[in-house]
Length: 84
Image 1 (cartoon, rainbow, N blue to C red):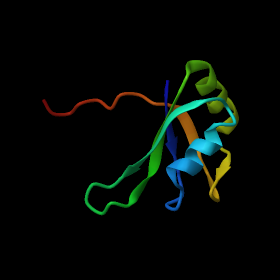
Image 2: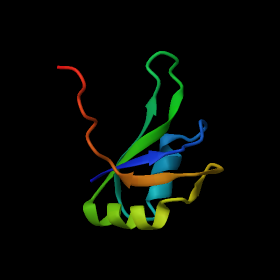
Image 3: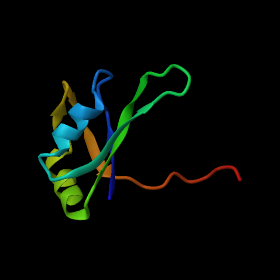
């Protein structure tokens, strides 16, 4: 299952993000989304983990502090396409 993680501090690394979510279970992938033009973090990312661990992460890690910021954790949904 893929989780959406929002309100990340600009200084947060993918390793810090992954380590935070290891509290809930094994993490397959941790990604922080970067701006295509500036190359700077956009303040959100994604975590991929098994369904059971993901449900635990949503319940236990939403609104917890990571790098000085309270993060938002929810199940990720596909972005709707606006153009063909």
